[in-house]
Image (cartoon, one colour):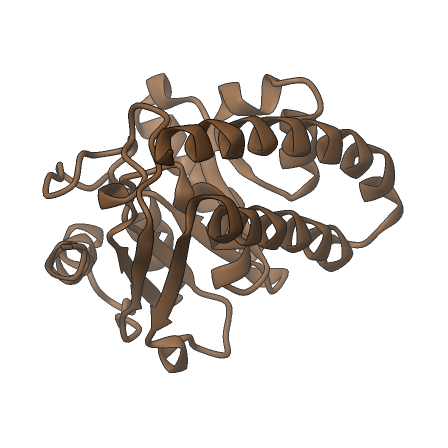
Length: 233
């Protein structure tokens, strides 16, 4: 029964996202950034509501009071597809750091561009980091938060890898706070397969990490310690 519910939700997810992306690409250029992001937040909330209704998979957030009032850089655990759309509901208006290939997807990718995403070429090495810093500085100056999945790819529950330096490098360059965000979505919505298990995903927003005058690797290590310690079942 849960497999059927999961299949139904996946079908809804794909169809709704594609149709909404067409609408977004048409309406988005007529709106300022925050208007566009409000549309993205609506998309996210619909998907979260449908997930609760169809698959009985909900979420709760701890630590909302830790979100700074100033634009910040979020380093978020990446273990599922869940966080890739939930982030629009969980956090203030934001730009996403992602691989540039995603922006090539018809309608969906075009919509991502309208949200001022920082699209990078992963094979560019140091040039990609410099691009992230330059564009990240621009987004922060415009009052837009930045969300980074420092692991770079979805990791199985209980696993991690060395965090990429990009998000921490933006923080070290700008002095903007880093907000670590942990969650255990991978235990309910695995990175492979259709199954979504019922339950409640736990999201933990950590206290801001001061970054002024600090090395990017040091910032990363502090964020990773918090995220991995709070991403368990």
